[in-house]
Amino acid sequence: RRKIAILTSGGDAPGMNAAVRAVVRAAITRGCDAYAVHEGYQGLVDGGDMIRKMNWDDVQGYLTTGGTVIGTARCKAFRERSGRLQAAKNMVKEGIDALIVCGGDGSLTGADLFRSEWPSLLVELVENEEITQDDADEYAHLNIVGLVGSIDNDMSSTDITIGAVTCLHRICECIDSISSTASSHSRAFVVEVMGRHCGWLALMAGIATGADFIFIPERPPWGEDWQDRMCAEIKKHRDLGKRKTIVIVCEGAIDSNLEPITAKGLMDLLTDRLHLDTRMTILGHVQRGGKPCAFDRNLATMQGIEAVEAVLSSSPDIPSPMIGMNENKITRTELMEAVALTGEVAKAISRKDFVGAMDLRDPAFNQ
Ligand code: ATP
Image (cartoon, rainbow, N blue to C red; front, side, top):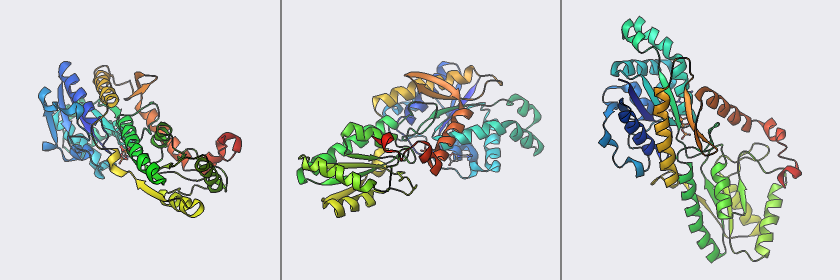
């Protein structure tokens, strides 16, 4: 009888609970035992009561609840081999032979590392007499499956991540509220949204709310005079009779010299140059809280079921999969590949040559 565990790790994302529910119920339906590891990797390192068997009813109400009921954490210990050794010991002790990790790129990087080290961790545990050779033989193959739970939509090899659409809806609701007060007072608002080094939330929210300007890390404003051009554009909108100005800035936005573009900097610019009554709103954690939207509930449910199927159809020679969605289909891609590709994109954005490589300073590219 397979014992499949799920944990949620990194920043919470709406829909993580729906994923836990789907994994638990799909595992039970397929004749397996389901376990929840509480507090992310910390629960795996600590073991004991942190790893709990889950029954069908234990996930009642999970589908519609925001955050993650089983808890999440940033776990330092799991970044060290000694922590992962402890985690391996606890898994063998509980008889768990498959782990489904729902988290962002950091969590899935950790999962991939854990998988690659697994045989050597078992050897070390046998040497330390913490498990027997029979245990090591029985648990020689660890199944790891990744589910991408992240509001940032910053993972390669999937079109969308669990939680991003809910977060986008929340941002749009907030900007709609801000817009009505902005119009009333003829004010300008600079709104900072989450996303770290990924501008998906800022870009999508900007289009959906009809923002005047959007700043995202992937496409810095070109040239040294971008402030002049932005002010000229906003002045043009105002001269046409527009009573509100909305500028959206991703928290990781940069200019073409890789200097941060901040909400405060933009507010000062609009105030000083255009004499607009400008306010700044950092949306913060309100963006990630609350009920998941229907899309995220369904995405997490379909992907949770697929994760269990991936465990059951795995074999030692098939690499660990990451469950994604591409062109509206639930997909499996190699976890290792997706993690590597995501790392490459993040590195490229923080390099100046990437800006040049994409011709971001070329006016033609920015038309
Ligand atoms: P979010 O995108 O919401 O920030 P995330 O999964 O990227 O989520 P991280 O804080 O980067 O969040 O990672 C969560 C946890 O995963 C870490 O606290 C750590 O325990 C583990 N982890 C991350 N990177 C590694 C790594 N390189 N090696 C081992 N474990 C890691």
